[in-house]
Image 1 (cartoon, helix red, strand yellow):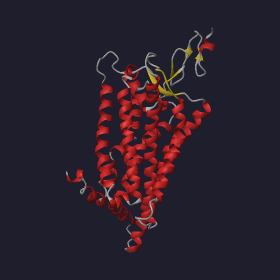
Image 2 (tube, rainbow, N blue to C red):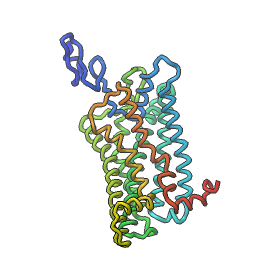
Image 3 (cartoon, rainbow, N blue to C red):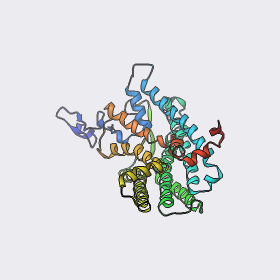
Image 4 (cartoon, helix red, strand yellow):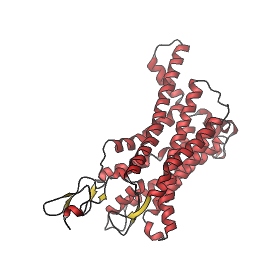
Length: 354
């Protein structure tokens, strides 16, 4: 059989009957993609662990990743329990903001617990069990639930920004019907699950590209579905970030102009800074969410090929991916700490008194 017949579609047959692979591909037939953009977080972590310190009994990357994600779990439990105690206060849970924030905390806890479970099963994925039911749960169900929860958190935070705009710019009643929060939460959850449902079917535990004896969860989409999947993934990031950005602009401009008009002032920049500090509880959440998601988005959009064999690129991808999980881990510092009224309510809770 000739080289041309053996090479994959991306490979080029050389004069000595071997396949020349383009960037982001490897293997005798260029059949294995090393494009980190296509890697899930756990797959990228597994790649780094397996290619670093292969002759050592102690894996430094594995220790660092486990430590970081476990620390995030501890932070998430502490922050979200503190937030739930605060948001469950009658004055807060009676509002749209409170109901959305309660849902956000629950989704955030599920997200980080699922992420920790995925991290802990990476080294022992093959050794834990060979049963199909375990592999299906560990590969097709739990990772998809984590991804869904991350996107639900993004959309819930977007709904919160819309609520902030309605309260601050259009003088909506804080204690009006909670219909907006209920509809936003339910519709956002259904929409997010619907756009990720195909992943439950398409994820496969395939032989790893480094060692065929080890399996790794990856996606096996036909081309049309792959294009749709990439489009949906980008939309789940770009659309909420756009809502956050526009919400910030609308609130800043409206608040600054109103202050200038009411107090007959013309020092726009000074008023702008003054109002940003005064109403930081409106601006901290969207700024943090934008900053935690933007690096990962830019890394993925700037180039179609980022080779995982470049350790710096691989670890940058992992770091930016982990950064996405930061807002659900520090909800106390996102929603409660910047707000004087929320801090007052928190101080009346068991954790606040302690």
